[in-house]
Length: 306
Image 1 (cartoon, rainbow, N blue to C red):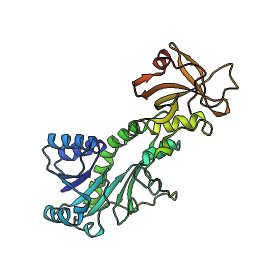
Image 2: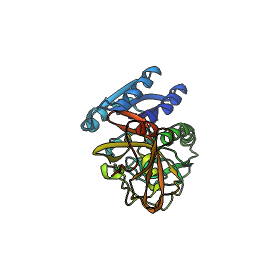
Image 3: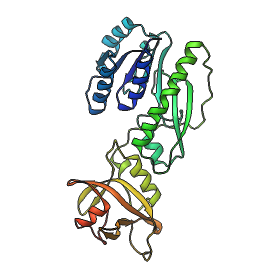
């Protein structure tokens, strides 16, 4: 079995290592644009002595098509790859093109499914392997696995967990398709598409969002987005970790108001409906600090996040 992997992120590295160790990985293809995540993929490829190529989006129908035809792979697997593959290329591999998607399709189609699942507070997510077709994430679903989202799990932690679990799912898929034992499955009826999140999606609205909703946003924004966004004393703050808390003796503070702050216990903020959050970790222009450190540098009760 000769497999070409399309990759653009560190989440593909466990699969690269596994396929290379089984001598199944023919080559890896990455986008032309070099960024921190695919540079790490490049290191993993080199460590496994696997050939790799970079192609621009406008080269898919020309240089990539020619190269792919020459390689004559048995299958191509997309894993964190951002280009839409032209339909005319999909039948070049013997078994076709397939994609690994971090949701239970057809739910959460789109480029950032884990962000949205955690932001929405879903108890379960999962992994789908599907046939590629002319659109993103719409091909026939072939294999799925449900993976619970643990309380407090961040986008980075959950995605890394999926990247590890996906190795066995991909190997199972390869064995089934190669032996002709892959049977079609009936996907769920919950269809949804979510776009790439923008500033409004990771900005905290203290007046409209409860403590649990804000905690979900914070977890969804850690790590790739760099934290949920709020303002404090005219300065942008990126909130990286919070925890729901009980505060006695306060029932009048407006949402976003810091109701308690000291260097021993940290910083506590009022949310709507008399709910509270403890601020555990933030990033401000001066650095990344704990709530206790915020208190030590002058953040005090009465200051307001907005």
